Length: 361
Ligand SMILES: Nc1ncnc2c1ncn2[C@@H]1O[C@H](COP(=O)(O)OP(=O)(O)OP(=O)(O)O)[C@@H](O)[C@H]1O
Ligand SMILES: [Mg+2]
Image 1 (tube, rainbow, N blue to C red):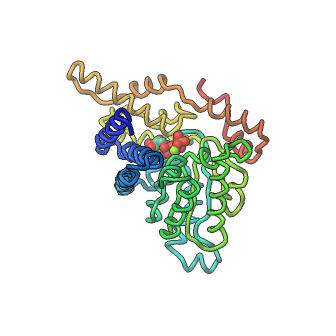
Image 2 (spheres, rainbow, N blue to C red; image 1 turned 90 degrees about the vertical axis):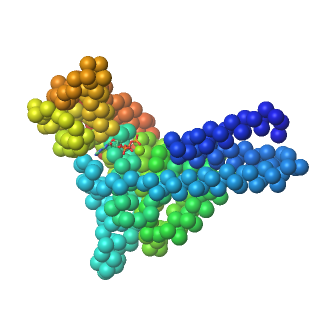
Image 3 (tube, rainbow, N blue to C red; image 1 turned 135 degrees about the horizontal axis):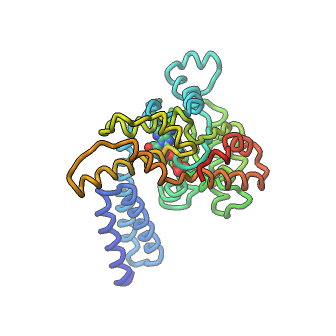
C-alpha cells in the first residue's frame, strides 16, 4: 500500500471513530468499507497479507459491535402509536402476535405462525413504522435487512451473506424479518443485473425453506415500487399477501396531528378536525413536517423578540398551505408504470385509492 493510500485509509478510520457517537449506522457502514478495502489489499500485497487480514478482521468486528448497539437502540413504538392501517395491524396479529399468545388455539385450527407480507405504497405513510411496531407487539427479535446491509453484513459475496443471515434467522425464531426498500433487493429477474438475479434466486431458496414447515418467522417487505419486485417472490408461501399502505384517512390524519401537537403549547382554537380535512392526500410524514414547521415559526419569533406564544391555528394553516404533498407524483407514476407492465393486482388497488381531483395540485 503506498503512502497516499495509507493516509486515506487512516483518515477514513478517524472519520468512522468520530461518527460512532453521532450516527452509529454510518460509522458501521464505514468500518465495513474499511474492512473490505483491507481485504482487497491483502489479496494484492502478499508480503503484508497477514497484517492486512488482521486489520480487516478488527474493523469488521468493530462494525458488528456497532450493529448490536444499533439493535439495542430499537424503538419502542407500538400499534397504538400508528394511526389508521387497521387491516394491516389485523393481518400482522393473525400471522404472528396472536399465535404466539394462544399457541393451542392456532394449533387446533392448523394455522402456522409466520408467512410473508409485502407492504407497498407511497413514501412516508407508515410502512417502516409498522414493521418496528410489529416486532415490539410480538416481543420477538427483529431483523432489519436491506440490500445494502445484506451485501455488506458479512464481507464476501452477497449469496453467502444471505445464507449466513438465514442461518441466524432460523436460530432466533420466532422472529420478524423486515426487508426495507425491498425493490432494491427483490429486483425483477428479467430487468435486473446478474448480481441481483443471483441474490433473488438465493433469497427464494432460503424462503422456501420456511414455507412448508412451521418455522415461526414472519417476513415483512416494504416498497414504494412494487412493480420492481420479481413475480416469483410474490407467490403464495413466499410473500403471498400484498397490502397497500396508502395515505392516512381523515381519522388517521387527525390522530397524527394530535400525536404531534398535544404535548406542545397550542392555542385553544386549534381545530384538529379542520386540520385533518385540509390535508387530504398528505402522507403521515408530511403531516409531521407541517407540525414541525408551525412549531419552528413560533420558536423563530421567540429567538427574534424573546416573546413566547402558543402555536396557533393560523400557524398550522400557513404550514399546510406551504407544503406541497407529493402524492400525485407517486400515484401518477405508479399508474403509468403498472399500466405498462400490465400488473393488474397492484393497479386495481392503487386506482381505487386514487382520486386525482382530490389531490392538492
Ligand atoms: N399512520 C401513521 N401514524 C403515525 N405516524 C405516521 C403514520 N404514517 C407516517 N407517520 C409518520 O411519518 C414518519 C415516516 O413514516 P415511515 O418511515 O413509516 O414511512 P414509510 O412508509 O416507511 O416511508 P418510505 O416508503 O419512504 O420508507 C413516521 O416516523 C411517523 O412520524
Ligand atoms: Mg420506510
